[in-house]
Image 1 (cartoon, helix red, strand yellow):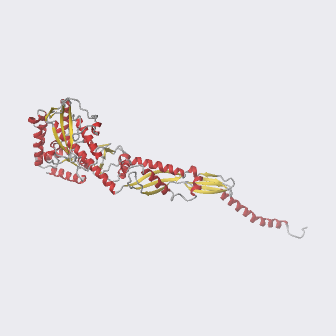
Image 2 (cartoon, one colour; image 1 turned 90 degrees about the horizontal axis):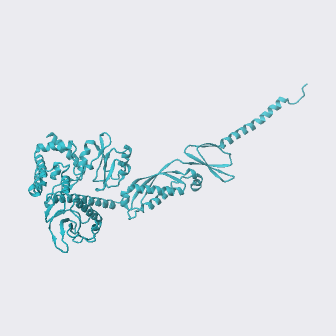
Image 3 (cartoon, one colour; image 1 turned 120 degrees about the horizontal axis):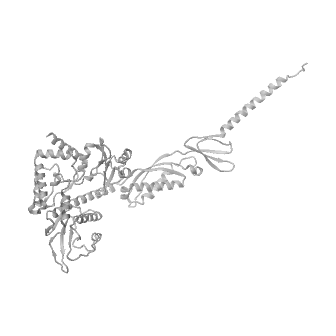
Length: 540
């Protein structure tokens, strides 16, 4: 019999209804606890976890990690590499103000993230790094002179990078790369460098003129001269710096030594203890009965007189009539050197666009110097070459054929065929060319592509040594790194003309000072004129 009251099934249902919200709350709490116990660290980030009980912080790498909620405080830090461009105006050791812009690639030091967090917090050090970089720039630039930065940029960049890396380590930052994207000098400094390069070019031209005059004075005489003097008009400006003049003196003396002309030097009649004399080991001592040359410089450096003199023992008299000590072998070498690899234009010392009258004047002048009646048997072969050159260049038809032939066979070599580039691999439609009129000798192209470019130390500028000698990417970096944009891509058929015209070209002489050499001011305009002349000759 059933007793009165609530049935047992109804009590169980009520308990279930009471426990349902509790179960739901426990489930949600457990789910939330599980969610906050998991920490997901994305790629390119790191997590710094601080234990609230022990106060110890440690670093977690990318991935999913389990942490007890409430015990740990978590900080996510971006450790990806970031770029930053910084501009600064430091001052060099010689008080030249520069305008420098550098680009940094930096990131936090992942092994020191807790220290990094304590120092910077969650804010990245974008406001701190420019001050640190400018401080390092001032410290490094102060060690250099402006000219050292102009010609020694790779060393400067290496030192700057090392300085920035060392400073950044103190603040728990890693610098992966430092590049100088702008290095500007003041207008006054650039003008001074240009004047120095022009002066150097004048000295090189003067040395070339001196070589021609010296050889012309030695070879026709067959090694024997009475009086033995000749004058060289250098045309050097009186404002040329003493250091460049000293360098020129050394080069000229080395030239005379190589020709067997000079053994001692006398400047303004006083060569004792002169620095140039010391370099050559003279020290003011002259052995008796020994031939020596005295080079007398005028105070304005306008010219030089060279004379072979003989010193007689225990007398102050000097004989002006002497016999050269140049032996037959040396004379033959000089004679061969003078006539090798010469075109008809170079043989007569005229330019390719000279008029018939200029060719005739040059021919007569050389015949007076090298005729066998004057120069002896040694001048016979040379006069034959002069006659052949004169015959070809004075005939309009023969001259046209000759111009086309020497251009086709690549004989526009001027005085030095080593100035022409060679090719690595097959010929390509484009080639590299350095306009040496505008090159400032910064060596950037040589630094990035040293198999393609080289420095011509005698001219102080770069040139192409081997076409495509390096990777195409390295070559393009070299082209882009040129601060004055003097490296050009040109057509392959234009390259030979440009490289020929880059060398000093003969110009008309004046009076007794002979002919000189000059380089076209605008190399590309000169190349266009040269091509038009060749095309006209082919059509005519």
